[in-house]
Length: 199
Length: 112
Image (tube, each protein chain N blue to C red):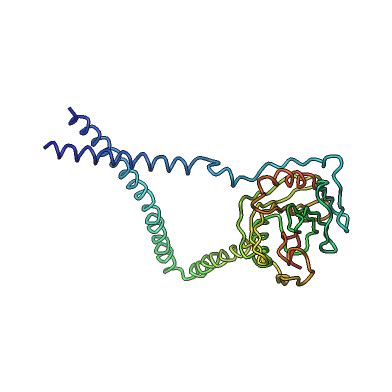
C-alpha cells in the first residue's frame, strides 16, 4: 500500500515537472526578443567624426567615410574600398561602396545578398539579422548582417551589407571583419555605415 | 502523512493533463468544423444553381467564368522569390581580380 502511494507520488511529481518544463519552454519561445543576437542594431545616421577620410563614388552618388586606421585599397573601377590589413596581409576591417549594378532591390535585399554570396565567392552564408526601412544620410536602405566562409582560403567573415536608395541612385555599402573579431569591430563598422552619405 | 500530499499532487497533475487534453480537443474541434462548414456551404450552391439552371439553360454560361479566377492565384508566388544574381565572377584571381575573388571580404557589386 505504501509502495503504491510512493509510486503515485513519484508519478505525480514527474507529471508536474514535465508540465513545468513545457510551460517554461513555451514562455521562452513566445517572449519577444528572445534571441537578442538576431536583432538588427539601431542605426542612427550621423556625420563621420572629424579626421575620417572620405571616398566619393566615381559616379558621385555616394560618399564613404572610413576611420583613419584604414587605408584605401584597390577594387572595381566604379567602386571605392578601404581596409585595415594585418602585417601578413589579411583583412582586419573592410569597407566598400559600390553603385547598384544588378537586380538589387530594397525588398528582400537580405535574400539577394545571401544568394549572391553563395553563388559568387562564399562556400556558405548565413543571415544573422536583417532590417528594411533603415534611415541613412540622404536616403533609406535595407540591411543584412550575415556571416560567410570564402571558397578561397576558407576565411570566415561577418558583414553588414546595406542597399541604400538615395534621391538619384542606389548603392551598396559593405562593412566586414573576420568573424572572430566581429564583436570588437562591429561598433566602428556600424559607425562607418551610419556615416554613409547618399545623393 | 504523505498520502494526502501525494494525492493532492496527483490530482493537480491530473487536472493539468485534463486541461491540456481539453485545450487540444478544443483546438482540434475548432479547426475541424471550418473545412466541413465550407464544404457544406459550397456543395449546396452548385446544386441550387443547377436546379435553377435546368429550366433556364441561359443561366448556365455565367458559371464557367467563376472557375477562371483561381487560375490567376498561382502567378503570385514567383513575384515573392528573391532575384537571382547574375553569373558569378570566377574565383582565384579571376574576373576583375578583386580581393573577394581571392579569399577577401565580398564587395558590394551586383555580380556583373
